[in-house]
Image (cartoon, rainbow, N blue to C red):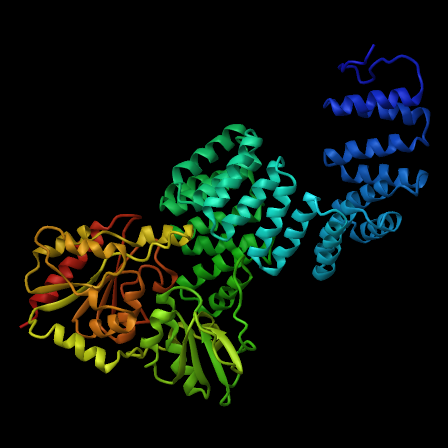
Length: 640
């Protein structure tokens, strides 16, 4: 009769050969009764210590439940008995790798491949191990050999994708994981990895097409629901992401991964209080996990608790010193506090973050003397960031550089008038050869900007005279206080993180209803994009003059702003444009204010003509708009 599992540590069995006992052990192992299988294997070895198959099976059981040192001892014994078995040598190598004995593991991998040169599993695993030793090129070459041997080897494609991640080429990683997913459509973990990779290149729709079937394959696995929550979050489906997180927590109440996903969802939704509750729970579950601590530091940063955020970020970096996300998040907290000495240096960590590529048009400038050499300054983030930091072009020209700009096309005409700039090229154009290159937002670090040495002379932006004349004629005869309005930023729906920030910084024109009661002011729309249509339906009593049909690019907007007395705007590119022109500009700033505004200061050392009106609590615009309306009434009342 077949053996049945029993609570007895040594289940009864009829006398027979070692082969019969081994067959019973294999049957128990396959039916999920690993403990019974291990007991039988040990009985075999008690009878015959030279039974190589029993040692290999016993090592496999130990390996399967994470007892890697014991597995290594079993596989080593098997190799003494059967030095010709490449699979056993490969198993030994894997066990040694997972116990941290990389030198011995490398020898074992090499021996396995000598025994069987065309061994895809060993090639793929050896490649991953070489990555850990810093031999990235050799690792990729060996992992690629596995796919030459077996092009349908799904694990090989996945491992090569993991190795290519170090090259920061997300599109290539997506292609490799797609091949892996096609080779193993029933592997839920692999399909989930492919979906996450698609999220990283902002392909939210195809990502969900991969992640949803993965969750259907293993609906009870937390490790699959987490990536699906991430995909839904990237697609902007906050409720869907929360449902997945709650399902994951129902399956595993101790899941730190579920807490991490939920806290990020609440951050993107702007509910920092709930994010803090979840982050605290995660810390209780994993107090020494660097990722959990980085998450908590980010929540504290959003809550405006700068010192605490810095403290927790430093703790995370003690655990994981090379974490690009940890270093970058710390830089934001330090910069917000005005600690530029440390903040700018850490801000460079953004180039090590996934998907970032340092501009390589020419050798990178290190901040040294320019001595007449040409230097290409490149835009890297939004229009406002370019307008903010283009002031350094004039500074570098004074230091002896021949400065060229590589910027967003809509800024080309305006920035052609920047003092000291020799040429301006759009990002859609190939720039000329230059001696040096630097990203605009790295310039404060490279020149050593401190809080007391910000180059704040304005204006550093200059509209074209012909454009200025055209807009001057359009506004001629207006005797009231001329106020430009911007109420929304750019949604950027293909970037979930940027879109969540935009939702927090933007409002509707209806929110400006308190301005309707102000006499002596004329309001002009500067709002471009979909939100600009609201100018045709202003709140009752608020007349908004819409001349935006005459705006083609930022040069036109600059010439328009030059004719105004004041610009009132949310934290978007127009605040930098107005500030760079030296025009009075009042900025409505979200609660989790951008680092460059130095917390909740009412002024800005970057722009002498700027005044900031901050939210007192997340999402609440009534109070800052009320304060702004009172200040505007006072300003209008002082006009003759």
